[in-house]
Length: 197
Image 1 (cartoon, rainbow, N blue to C red):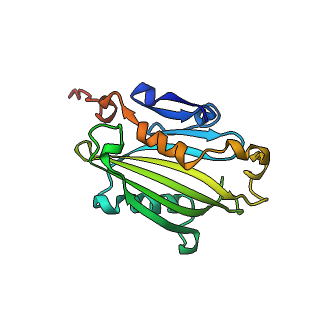
Image 2 (image 1 turned 30 degrees about the vertical axis):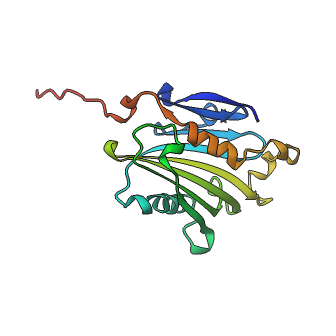
Image 3 (image 1 turned 60 degrees about the vertical axis):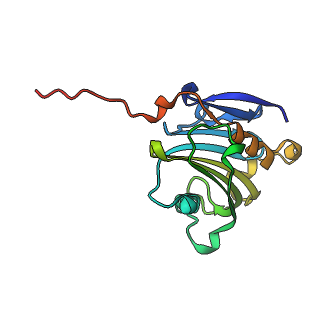
């Protein structure tokens, strides 16, 4: 699959994305601390979030974020989210600078979209980049549907003929390994002068 280096967060970050990735902000609102890319025919998505660093040990941080996603996805029930694998990513395999530690998690969640009753089984690949000196966690999530309920709004968007064009774990791995911070000013809150009247 062809990949191209894409500019994220106004050019402050860059990484290689599949050329089939569509910026979700052209069709819906995306929070300022996120970049969201979607595959138009498979319902797969890639989400990059810049977060204030979670107050947990490095080794527990990625599970903390996975559980937070489960709660946000209404999948906090023990039967609705499963962690299959957690492993540390060697820093020397990454392009990103000033990273303290990095972790990978593979798990599954039963997720409903837009508060629907129908739930889809989605595999989640997470990469957590911890920038301790900047008090920042960068969470990269690859959502890959395994089963889409026929009553879900996602069911109509999936093109069965597109299976050969689906994003793979290798695409996800190439993304986070090529992830590069160009402008660290992105992580520095703007200083505002406060005038006393």
